[in-house]
Image 1 (cartoon, rainbow, N blue to C red):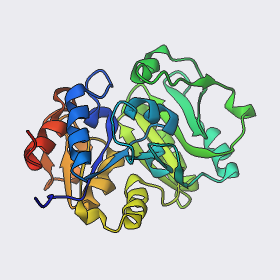
Image 2 (image 1 turned 120 degrees about the horizontal axis):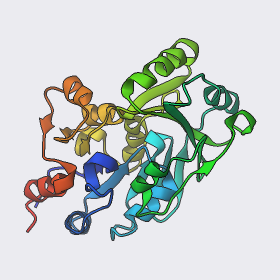
Image 3 (image 1 turned 45 degrees about the vertical axis):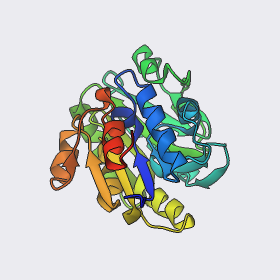
Image 4 (image 1 turned 60 degrees about the horizontal axis):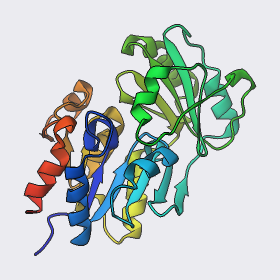
Length: 271
């Protein structure tokens, strides 16, 4: 039987992970069956590699590719690093010094295998309860800029992030790629870093193109990936801005119902 696509690409939070930010058993079984049929699996997320590695280790797919920090890094599930695109140290430090309202915004960075934050926020830990990955609180004014994959700002509301986005665009717009993983999370990576660009590089090494892949996502950081895939599917629970930017793309069910796995079972005719 000819497979409809050579590879499956999926975002995690709001897409492949369920409402408890875990990968469901139905999804695990679906991905395992597809891998046995020779379909390549790519997980593309804003999360950092150590976090994703623990989340995905439940999936029995040895050759799965993990695209993390919105494309700044890629690893095989086995651990081998395939690519890194760090922010220059001076630029990373400058982004860590961008002015913001500390009562409504917190500053974060992914650097190497570490997650740094400027203040302890207990509510963030629920997103990482399955992996146990956690942040380290630091004073960013006295912090280093080494191996920075991304700097990101989490606001209480989207409006809290608007002046930060405008400031970065005006001062560093030519040097960075900015996007939102959720309406409350503004993320900044090195110029030309995106999920789509990392995936384009990876699938080329496998001997095919993004047009041979099906992709699933729910955030603005998935836009390029969904637009350039052979078929891009938007989650029913996706950011409204993503739906507006990709009006011709099919909208499927919600992540809480493991809609990606349901869709794939029908598409690939799995039992």
